[in-house]
Image (tube, rainbow, N blue to C red; front, side, top):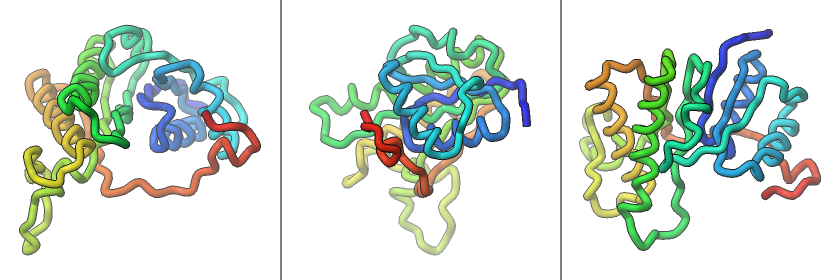
Length: 204
């Protein structure tokens, strides 16, 4: 099925990002994805090939950073939809917590502003259940959207804190600008995906 609409997927090198790209290509969409370095292109293509994507005619790449304006206008050009998946992941405790969180918070705001400028119809942000589910302790009721996680709570991971602050920033921006945005919160991401290394190629 051929679909002429262009979709921007930020964070194309991530697990969720690549899965989204795969499904969009299978449905015939034109896909543009953001990467931090063109060295990632072969890794993405290798993983997609391992998951039955045989043509890359509808896939393009743009180098961007969440903390810089460079190339975001190019990335958004002619896109009808934006799927904001890119977000920093922390494997070690950084020396400066605020600087570590800044890309997530500033990044979503940058994406929304450039999407608005480009006339994008809808932005979908992938958030995390930790943004609302970490400090809601009342087991007698369901956790709801307004149960924001306390970002000062003991034991809260830096990742969950960054996702909470980023989602709050996104909602604040959309209330002011009346932009159309959807939030998709993950309780967990699980899927069977063949990685590039399974095809005999080195994963970089």
